[in-house]
Figure 1: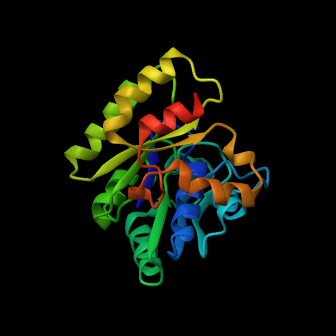
Figure 2: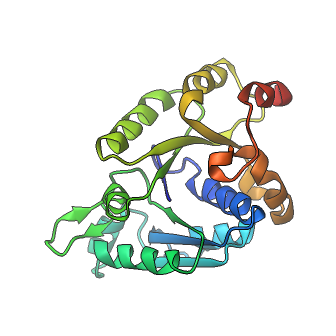
Amino acid sequence: MLVTGTDTEVGKTVVTAAVTAAAQAAGLRVAVIKPGQTGTVTGEPGDVDSVTRLAAPLTGRTLASFPDPLAPLAAARVAELEPLELYTAVDAVREEADKHDLVLIEGAGGLLVPMGLRPSGEPWTVADLAVSLGCPAVVVARAGLGTLNHTALTLEALERRAVPAGVVIGAWPAEPELVHWANLTDLVPNLLGAVPAGAGAMDPGVFRRSAPGWLTPALHGVLDDWRAWAEEIS
């Protein structure tokens, strides 16, 4: 399953951790793969490290890391490093799929960010990876103004590629305003979950116990009534 987003910094890593926690609570063996990690020059933990801290997947792998905070292909070019090849990523996911019940692939930025190169020399994106693997996608979206357009564009791009997809709100605010509630209403037909803002700073034990309540059964959670959910948090 691909975890992508409408943009960068929308909460993909925390949503990946939440799905991992919910799936493992349901008894599944989960692997998390980050094909391209960028911005690691400071030595700070990467996204897989954050997922591991919060949700402790059975396996966590980063396939390629680049120091500059750019799109992975651009970061490889600037650092004069070998870009990630599409079928290297495909093979890595398939290898883990043989040993796990669920493999989560966390993208970088949005759906069409250049990730690396094909054998032909053409760039590839995580959308291409999802098509090559025949896997569904989760689109992580913002809660606020502008999200409806960005989400619709991302879902349309996935639909044109015959990739099934749903939406998770990456950071639902503690004090939602009118725009958040209006967006929620419009997103509900495609909505698979909503992770509270600040969830990434939770104690890992609290995070793991809470995660199933943020996600619908399609993502191994227990959230089955958006009206009840809205009334509970309002």
